[in-house]
Length: 116
Length: 114
Picture (cartoon, chains in turn cyan, brown):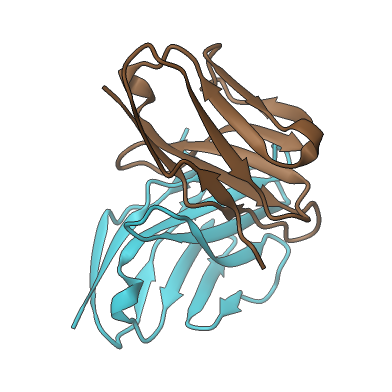
């Protein structure tokens, strides 16, 4: 079963506008971590933001914020004031406490295109 | 602060040849991961080291794949008798064990098997 679901294969947003990228997850663990990564065409995965399952506040990092709704098992990424350089693939990932390897499970990603 | 580095960045090989990739993690990180990413997919976990010990291997890691991390520093991933299905991006990540542990990725090695 898919652990991470990203339902938007592609998104468009105009420069300076805000955009929300959706992510839902599936786990029976009480302790887990949720991550968002950005992957430009160069291929490197760039860490953006982290949310722990016990964190009561939504995580924020500069223009990035994570809208964490635990009961709905969703962890949407919000990018405010989009810039042309934000055009990239965005991946949601989860690490579960029960996973002894501490590996990340990734979704299939959302391609974001920021237009002038 | 030096990030994760990988070498080579690109590799083209013929089916049946052996290839080896290298990953240098962030120096203070004790955990190291290898992932494989094919076109249109997110990265998939291959294997994980804590210091020099290989603690977890995915079912994706067939007998043709072997990974090492001698002395708990850099790591190598070798693929023997490459097949066209091995064509992918191979990503290395490292992390420091602890709360809010975050994996930082290298630039990846793109492998093309002809």
